[in-house]
Each structure stands twice: as C-alpha cells, then as structure tokens.
Length: 152
Image 1 (cartoon, rainbow, N blue to C red):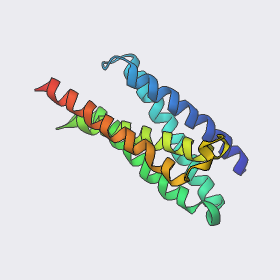
Image 2 (tube, helix red, strand yellow):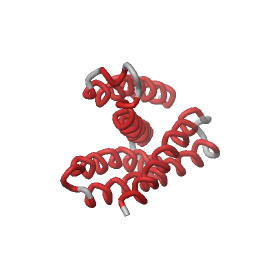
Image 3 (tube, rainbow, N blue to C red):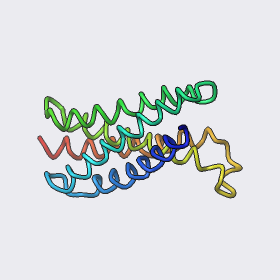
C-alpha cells in the first residue's frame, strides 16, 4: 500500500514541477496561466494527501513528512485562494503562495535525490534544505515588486 502512494506521490510531484514551471512562464492572463495553475494545484493536493498518508503509514520514520506536507500545502492553498477571491493585495498573496509552494516542491525533490548525485552527495544535506529558499525568496520579492509597481 505504501508503494502505491509513493508512486502516486512521485508522479504528482513531477507534474507539479512541470505545470508550475509552465504557469510561471505563461503570459499572466486567463488561458494557459490559469490552466497550468489549476493543474499545479490539483497535483499539489495529490502530493499533499499522499505525503500525509505515507507519513501516517510509516509514522516512526516519516512523522516530519506529515508536518512538512501541511506547511507546504498552506502556501499552495494561500496562493490558489488569493487568485480565486482577488481581494485586497491578492496578487502579492497569490505570487508568494504559489512560488513558496514551488520552492517547497523543488526542495523536496532535491533533498530526496541529492544522495544519488556524485560530488553533490558529499556536501551537507542541510545545505540543500535551505538552498531553494535562499534562491527563491529574492525571486518572489522581485516578482512581487514588479507586479505591485505595475498595478499602481
């Protein structure tokens, strides 16, 4: 049963990487951006649910996954809801939430796979837990400023 959820988790995570990237590079209007954004959110829900199930099934070694799944999905949900409701400062919340959740997916993929990459596997794993956030946070800030200035 665990293996089934792991396969689903990996497929949905890979699809998150693709659809999230396509949503980021698509023109920011209804159409491709929203289609890829919807697909990204659906796949993130699958990643979230499968991570929660796997953490529960192997609680002793994977309890941390349970909490990381909730923390990561919070970003995706915040960005998704902001894009749907379009309230005050919605664009800043949308950008921060969606890009924050993308950083979480990238971090997960790197941390899980870095041990298989020659030379990089000799570096401290903790570096790879923080590197996507260190790189991604300034990008979120720059993009947020770009759209904040453009809307004034």
